[in-house]
Length: 64
Image (cartoon, rainbow, N blue to C red; front, side, top):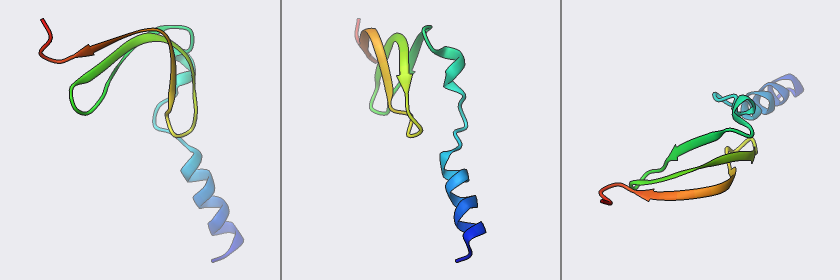
């Protein structure tokens, strides 16, 4: 594999569909597979979309 192909794949891997930087220090709600949801202030994230939330509340679908 050429050096150019390797660089292109690395660049493509690092790009994310979401630009979470505009949501930093704002309240967000995240929906997970399995019915869980979390709401809190976005403090940070990484390229794999691991999130750091502060003052978080967790919700389960079907809770009353």
